[in-house]
Length: 558
Ligand code: GLN
Image (tube, rainbow, N blue to C red):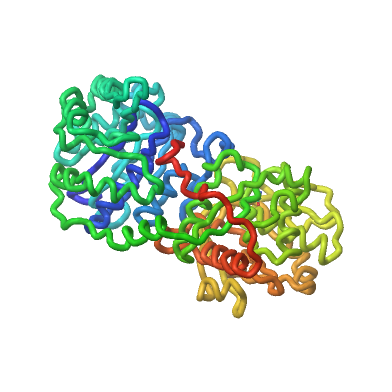
């Protein structure tokens, strides 16, 4: 923790899904581009220790950090906006806080005392805020987003901790930002400020006076509306920030900049720094808006009705699009439907196919059929984690003649378990945090597609899986033409496979989407999108309706 570390807390009111994560990320980017060292952190007020044990249907994607923490998807936004790898310190849940406090109590850490929410739980929360600032470097600013909506019962200990933190660390070092909604009521033809007033009242009851209000709105906030909000909420008019709906989340920081948000924060916190350098970011946003060519890529998964489950992949497509100057439209394909109606009905006309990660056997045969469709039609294919495993199974069955080949995850009695449980996984009995998680180095085979894409013979990528390619079948697979293009440094684990007789066919056991950044698309996404663009130029195919890629939470709500 630097001597002069400053702390910004971002809360949300009125309704959930206002895009607090994007707001916090955007503030982070603006401050970082002013030369400050910024760390972002999220508090999640649920009792799970981490979201790893929750269904993506409940929680959306599980984002994995380099150090192997399973975290909230907002950490993905943080990393993409501030272009910095975060750690497990950046996601704190009620479950973690209580686990620590209760373990300490059992060890006798509070001997003789009654253990209470105030001060013991709130002390632990405050220590996590300080911990975020202690990463060996001088952190100038910690931005902490408090999940949930003001007024939620489970959020109270976090808000109480924020209130105390400001007392402990000085008003001049802490800043509260509150995100609210200013709805437009059609019948009255008016923007309404009352929900914001109520939300701020609820915060004041807890003892927190917001310093800045960021107001989500469909329409411009007039001076009168701003003045009204300022008067009732006890802030200056300049501290009422308009956050109008935009078509891409990457525009939000530019919008905040126009409103002078970062100037106000820096002035209040006494941060002397030059204006932000946003040239690269502006160019990227400009590009997103100006792309004229488009391609369509099929996303063949299970959670296709909940796009949050694939948040980072969707963003990676945008990054890959920026790198290739082409808009990527996603065709969401439920692989159970492929099982019922065949691949042609759902995949005809696409320029690329992606099978993402997943767990459980629902829709598995449809995924294998999607791989086969890609291979037989020369359509660019990227398989991520489960998508690599599906590609290996398909190849084993169809090319190696191993009928009934499968993963022991789905068919423990398969005659050919070409995908099998990793050795270290066999003795695991606990579910939470026990997969192969986090960043591991990968050795890339010379002369492969992977080598061309990465431009390097080594990389490190993030993982979240229990199963892997069964080494007993490596020779059978490679003899039949599959190339193993990435392995763990000891050569024991297959990390990437490809089919060299295809225009673009690659699978990875890791999750490349977790390392893609807006101005630096991940090589595999850059590659897939580039190959899909080339495929379209050669074969034509769908000119699909406008992008769903930019259907993001800033516009639509999460
Ligand atoms: N279910 C597979 C495994 O555990 C794939 C995991 C994933 O796709 N993240 O290995």
